[in-house]
Image 1 (cartoon, rainbow, N blue to C red):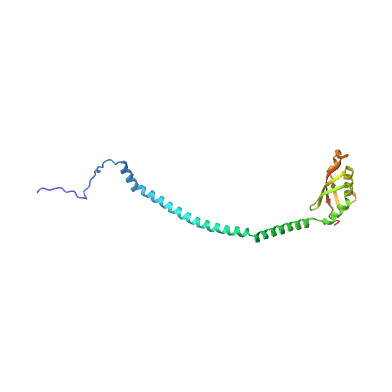
Image 2 (image 1 turned 60 degrees about the vertical axis):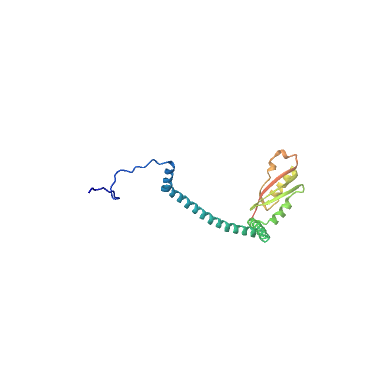
Length: 192
């Protein structure tokens, strides 16, 4: 009897099996099914995640945009426009009242006094009140009329101090007619 030697799967073969050289397709095929499948899975996962995020943000945007449109329509309604105009008018009135309360004198008394002190040939264009002073701008027909205005405010008034008319210091205006002037004066608060 001759013994034949049979190969079993449990035999140890220390030699590598010989493989024929792989083609480009075989290399690509092996790469796709070993590493590529994980990359493709990761890309698909990111795409699905981005789709879900876009869906949620679109829904949130739609709700916010609807609320914005509703609020815009309410704000542009005639009723709201009237309320805004009334509020702005109220705010302007309140600012005017606050300004008048901060003035330490009564404007009607000061206007009456200014009217008494203005000579006939001097015209007033504007009177501005601030907390403790006034400023007047206008036109004087002559330089002498400007001096009369200054004298009236300095010596004849019990309401004003620190009277300044910058044009009086300009000697080139002495012979001129229709001189534009500005007068500033402090209001004496202890007499009011």
